[in-house]
Length: 152
Image (cartoon, rainbow, N blue to C red; front, top):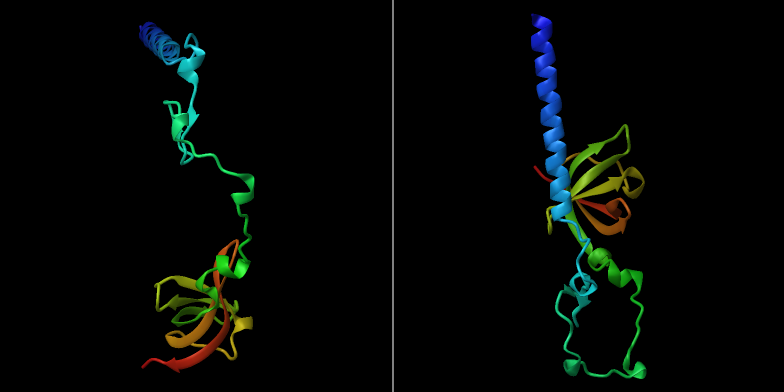
């Protein structure tokens, strides 16, 4: 008798799975792009570079001469922005054994990585420092660190 009940349960599961599969197939058919005309599938780009389903009104476009377009390269130092300005912060964590730690920037509150090779001497937590901020693919890091004073 237990076998009959187990078989019934198994048949119910299979029926539910078939029904679920049929519902998903029906949803795919309803949401399919097949059968739409080419015009319905077009997307346009407006003057700001955004996608739109409405074509651009060409009468509003101003012709531009190729000579008027100016290309400029921006030096990496300008891209970094304020990385050349001296900043102040406080050593929040430093592991002498591993040789690295983090400085909390007083201006932004960011945690900035610092390596022991950038320090003039061993530091303790809560010491105030001045540093330059650099950036690489991993994030910000401190360079040219100078120790200002320890907080009490």
